[in-house]
Image 1 (cartoon, helix red, strand yellow):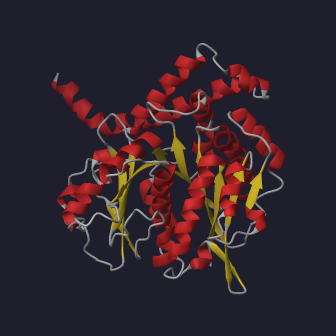
Image 2: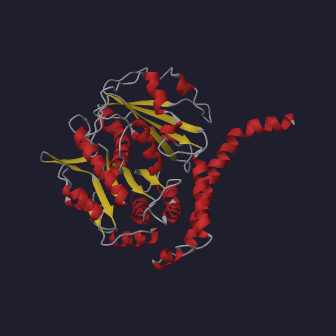
Image 3: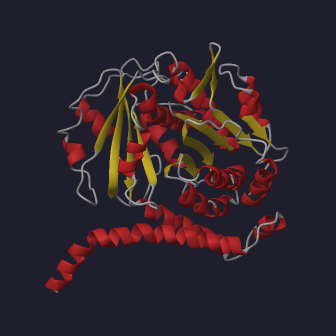
Length: 417
């Protein structure tokens, strides 16, 4: 029987992990394959998880809550805050031999959460993924659920540097990355819920719900997760997925109602529901609708016009996968709906956000602002050049693909001229 090890890195990754395991705990009694994410010993079940941070603040937040029984070796932390990639990398090298003892013969997947904006997630994330790649190679799948910089808001002055320095990690060491940004998640939550105040708990819950639905395929429906990803990633480097999620409703919203099939699909595939917003219209390389409810429907979405009319590069249709389980909520103000859905899109319009990240990076780096922080922590300045070269390669991969897809039309137009 296979299993997945969850790795939660840095402040954001740790708090997402905290919310996720509280959700898993609620789902435990219904799941049919709990040994996929738990180690079960003498009537107890312990999460197959490691929480890693450069300091102990967020780690202690998780440890204080006794809702979930973690083993002591599930936590690993340093003694200082890491605001930049170089500091996170240094702390990671100091701690790397102490963690990740939870290796198992039946391990077939790593589920990793972190933010590339902070130093712990970006720098420590590199060190962890680099060593996992050495130890496990391609035998174990590596799935990332990663927080990217927002286009207009940031709480880290060097977040752009950290993000660009992380590009090589994400393209080289992961099989698939599901992408989020805080601003887009705020907007989606605000669109779906009438809340007076949205905080990080709501954002973490949103990411946790999507991860739970993904791993739920194995836990509830015995579905091979690798098949789910292989459909979405037609090329090795082009493996960045943009999710949408719905429907969320407040527990005290007495007017709430479950949407009909057509309404629901239209709702969850809308552009403004994307959790990583791109200025360009979607141009899908491939898409999957992961639908979650207690009763299966073999014909769900097969004839839906919204899915048929999506703009796919290769003319294929949306893959529809169903997770047979109830929906649960950790936050008391949110209702548990009968049906939820996550729409995953390998969307070529992401290149517009990558170009924006490239532009914003060079605007700051051209003045060498804050570079001395990184050099002072031991990072050679040439690593910056190598990193934005990797970003350029990723951008070219998407742009070349778009040119290839549109080439027949362009040739036809040139012949007409």
